[in-house]
Amino acid sequence: MGEVVRVMPDLKSQEEGTSKKMMSNMTKGKIAEKIAIQMFKKAGFKVKKAGYENTFTDLADKNNLLKGPAGQLIRHHPDLIVIDKQNNAYFVEVKFRKYGVIDQKDLFNYPETQVILFTKDSIHCQNLKDIHKHGKKFLSLRSLKPFSDIPQSLIDKYTKKVKRTLGDENFFGQLIEEFSQKIVGKTFRQPLTEGKIKFTYVEDYMSDGYYYENTGEKETISSVSGINISSSTNNEWSDYKIQILKEYYRSGMSVNDISRNIHRSRKSLVLQLVKEGLVDIRNVSLLIKGGKLKTKRYPKNRSTTRNFQVRGKKTLSRGHGRGGKGNVKGQKKRNSSKNRRSTSERKRTKKN
Image (cartoon, rainbow, N blue to C red; front, top):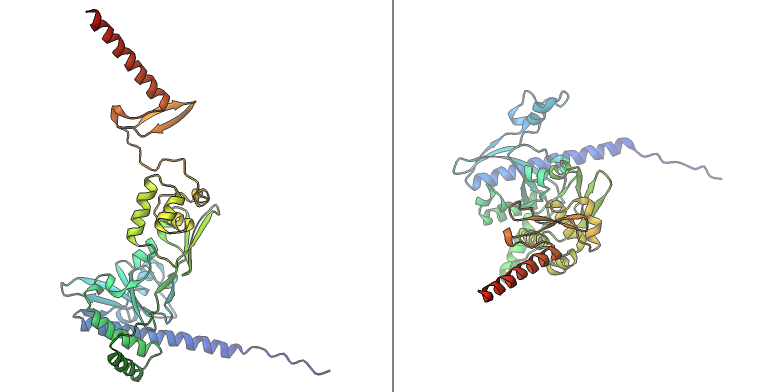
């Protein structure tokens, strides 16, 4: 019988590989910061490095990190201060993720700060407050101030530079591509890497006792009691679609009818209703099955709403001042009494 040899993993080489990867990410992060500075200056902005290691050099001690709330703000100070032509100042944090996926915990919620995310072939942006408070995703660079003032041609130029320095392309390959486009007379459009956030919480939901998570493929809202709802994130909701959804729901339309009209799954639209604060998470299972809520969808107007007793239960009817409709029986009684009065009046007039 041959001796069994157990090969133990080389922990030292694994640690070295991990540290090299971290060093590589840090190096590429610095390259992304340099590209951002060059692009802003070329667009006519003033740029000042403002990172922890640049602004507070005497405090930047990795072996003795600052503590407390103020220490957190100092250590996570944004990388850049960018000033536009109108002298408006902006904090800008620069991040790099080759494949566009970044953990929310890596985005410190520094006040009044925009974050730029570089991938191997694209540039994205978003406001840190909107990420943490509202769960918003990354947008194209020209979607927010001050980036909206940067010409698209300049962004395209620096996107090519990103592809060379942070991605898999080279200068010679890009020249061949440009030459081929001129011959064919068409621009070759390739899908760019999206900027995605791995959410672990969103303040809007946490404050109401809800837990929100977005893994990039699906988003989930759950409550402390264990009720949850999930939906795919493949098809994003536009502002227009959200407005239509709100109007349909407030009109009293059923979830099934809304689903057919806006071509969305019931799960997707119910989750969006929860996000918009129109539906309590305790009612999601009923709505997903196609049921209707018994609660009113319109706010009560005290001046025009009346209360009626129907079979011992107090129900609200949507009235319109004195002519408002109550329950059917009550309305019929009032109408019949009016008719009796009018008949007696006609008889008196005939006698006279």
